[in-house]
Length: 82
Image 1 (tube, rainbow, N blue to C red):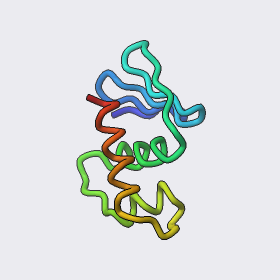
Image 2: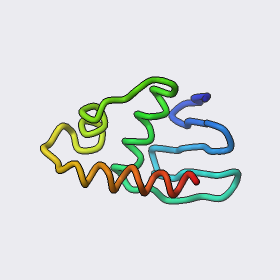
Image 3: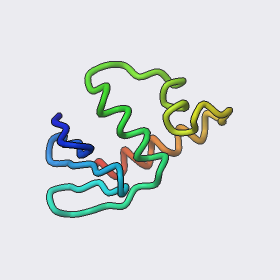
Image 4: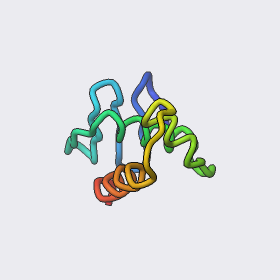
């Protein structure tokens, strides 16, 4: 993983969190604000476990949220990255 400015690169992917775009090669995919926050946290902690609480804090600013909301966001990220 490399970071240039606020652009994260991992494998063939590049994430521009400022505009919410994930590139696979040159193909852009728009991501929502929560997906960007979750993916950024996961990238910053690559190779390390990330707690559910840390994910919720990143995506929902620590607000109370049902587990299903986190599950849905992670599933959507997995589909996007597959």
